[in-house]
Image (cartoon, rainbow, N blue to C red; front, side):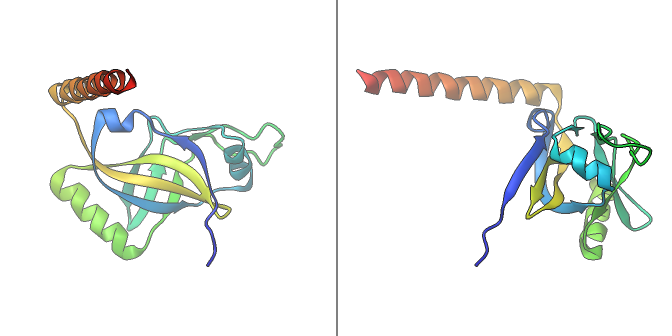
Length: 155
C-alpha cells in the first residue's frame, strides 16, 4: 500500500464565499517545463480562472503562472490556456451539466500529488447577494455560540 504525497500549491479562498459548490472532481494539468518549476515555487494565481469544454476537451483559462525566474527563451506565456486531463466520460457529463443548468467549472486548489500537477475543479452555481449575507450571519452565529460555550466550560 503506497501513501500519497500531496503538496498544495494554492487555493481559491473566495470560491466558497462566491459560489455554491455542487460537486468536485480532480483533473491533471498539461504543463510545460518552466511552468512546472514556477508552480513548484508557488508562483500561481487561480483567482479569476475557470474551465471550459471545447471540442471534446477540457481547458483551464486565466490561470496565471508567473514566468520562471531562471528561465530563458523557453519561458512560457503566463496566461496560456492549460489543457485538463479528464476521462472522456467525465468531460461529456460535465459538458451536459454546464449546458443544461447554467453551471460553471472553477478550480478550487492546485497541488502536486505524487509529483504530478493536479487541479481540483468544482461544479458551481453563483450565489446571490442575500445568500452571501445569510452565510456570513450563520458563520458569525456559530462563532458566537462556540465562544459562549467555550467560556462556560472554562470556568
